Image (cartoon, rainbow over all chains, first blue to last red; front, side, top):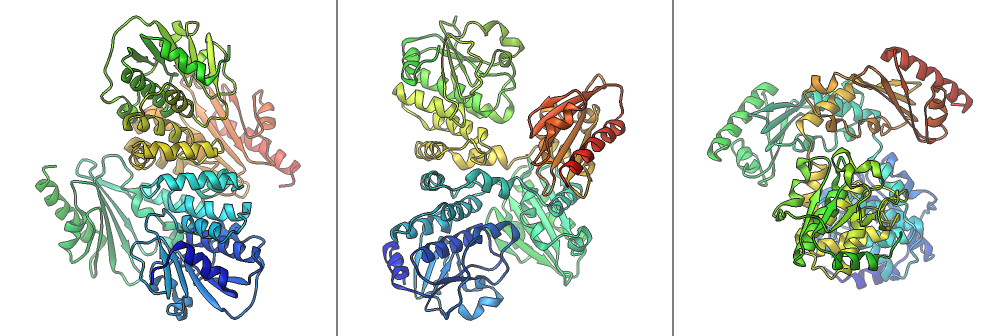
Length: 320
Length: 320
């Protein structure tokens, strides 16, 4: 059931022994929410602890620095930034039907909780948490401001994306006034590259091929890559979008080999090209700008050939 | 002479036939200022035109779209974002002593104009222009909002750097409300890479060498590179900072060969390493975090050897 922000804050004020859940493969927003709420609840003298199916990535460890670890049987369960049941992850599966309150900013929220407050206009769930904590009269410490700022900054690509609203910027202003170390956080998030990520980017730049006068870029990622480069899965994050960033590219194709030999294709297009139509030819689907399909029993070259053919046909239809 | 923001606005209101000057090698801020002011002055029925020593880069051409070109003898000259006489550039040298009003955000402003309004707390000169235009009662159109937003966004690395203040974010919020196409501008500025830039990054990633357990990264850029890669000088912008971004790197060294064979070194360090001390050994200088020196009659390998030796000594002194 949908409830108001005010009621959501009241539920947390009425509760104790609160368990906070983040989504699997946690990012800055779900962790920023969790750490801000943990700190806020502790500051009110409540017991609160945090669970996530996957470990907290090293770069986000600072969010939990100095937070007291507490042990108790949960009396109230709140999920932050979890859009759907599948996103609880393997280790938290048992909680999917036990959530008392869901705080989220995904318009597609799966309605798994007893009560929820969803604001799809919020760029980050941390925008919601900021309001909830204020409603709860929590004193926003500089540590809490850091947590909330991290969520907002990371979910907006550092205020770069289309989900940024005037409210997003005004909250950032307020959080800086409350002591958020904005520049330090941004440096850590965006200006620091791991050696592993460097290896990935080096590979991508070498492996990218351009077709149709630079209008199409194709990237093939063999399953062995992670091991070959000595990197982790997470180091490949966002690789599919690298080709799209190249000037003049209307179709970015990433073909990734899975462990079982299946070739997963993700297509990103700019108008007038339509990713969904191209993928539909191969039994896939998606949106006009981003779609996918998959092939089994085929080589990279075969799949690349099939896709380039379909892309060429669409380009012709578009008069490109 | 320093004047108030109010007076600066009054000077512009009192003037006509206004010539606006941007600094050489123009960036988003100086051009955003110029185009916003041009549009604002035109909207008040004044004549105004714009000059810059260098051509407007293609990516900033949109700032001037639809601006009427006017021809007249200047009656009033205003410089925007120009910190010093040298920054007028070759083609505007004759104007250095003729500026009536200087609007700038550099604390080091050279005081070349009859009157100036300098606010060193402004992240971008566009923060100042926004205030000046409001003071002048100019109606901020969505085109003007785009110009101002571009300046603020580009001078702050998309709200990433330490120069961002709460005011910066609040102005961004206001500009979006006034119709700035924030997401489109940001995509164009940060998510679009030229094929030439791609070639540069590919080269850099291949050419970077790591030393002392990854604490030092060295990049050598031969003079022939620009021609070899088929790129322009501008495509090399910011290359020196790429090595610093790698996790664990305390010393980033870039050795660039000039046309005359001179090898120019730029050093970037993180504490406890001190770039200035290292460069001083070779007759150079700078700040603790960024310094430079130059060598003539030496090869890349010789210079690299000398620098690595000096770096090793300092590392030892620092107990690294």
